[in-house]
Image (cartoon, rainbow, N blue to C red; front, top):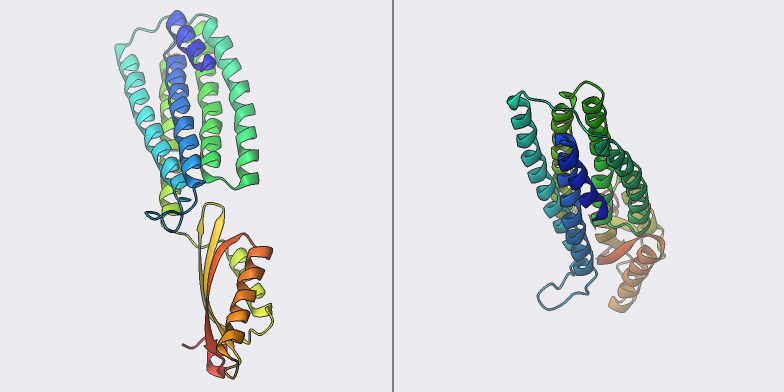
Length: 276
């Protein structure tokens, strides 16, 4: 908040379009961070009667809202930069814009690294999305710095040009965040290496004679698995149930599997070859 206010004041005082564009981007970040925080809090809620599979997708919804917000900011900033370029009158830029932009680059880089570290450690998609947004801000503030330097040292046209660059960076980041959130909401499969590890765990469980079918999906940092296993057809229902429970327990203990649905089939040689 302090950095955003400083950039607004510096942009108005120095007449820098690029710094004002960067300030608009920073103001968007404040609101985006509140959206991310709200999404994370909702995602942490346990399942209830209306959401029996939990609220984990709230993080992806928050990331989608952030993406839309960032895209809107990029478009508005680009329109302002184009209007400044069409005006054709470029005034020298005061030194305040330089120092504020330099400070913004340093602060945003530190914040982006911190959020990336925390987001990866807790596997929180919304935090990672916010970290990517902060990293985009580093380049945006860098472009604003270049514009301020140009405006202060005899190339004032660089300021609105860099404001346009900032707008493009903001828009690009918004599109990336939006597409990533859409992919998450479509229940993507885990990486191939993760899926192979899940298969090895299932096949290695005591009592499992075949893996007839498997599918998995990833929601945030959690994985959900549905599989069909082949067991000795002469076992009792209770014994087959125990094997299925063993598979679920191993998946939860050895992988980040939130839940697994295990269907038990009587083992047949053709099923071992993947036939229905």
